[in-house]
Length: 116
Image (cartoon, rainbow, N blue to C red):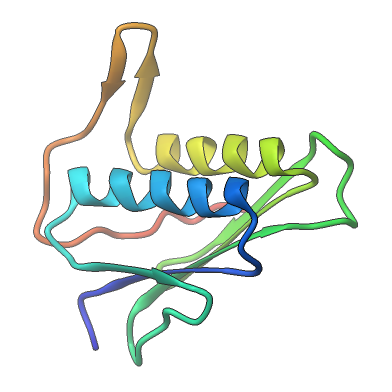
């Protein structure tokens, strides 16, 4: 399905599920596109964001690689993965302040940022 965002993750660790939920919440604030989450949430033509704890990274290291249709967000630990999700959200235009998050105006569709 086109005009959909799919958030995929490996495993069912609480921290990974929390990171997926946080990213879904961000997308729901900035776009009208439906967002699906799950271990294999992808739909044909959907923009896909994959989340994972990656043992090849150092404990607090993050990796974000994305283009207009796909993003791979990795962290060396569960905490690093959550940090990577918030870093990606900042690339989408979100600002996280002590008083609470600020979101860009909601759009019909969301372009994934190019990050390397």
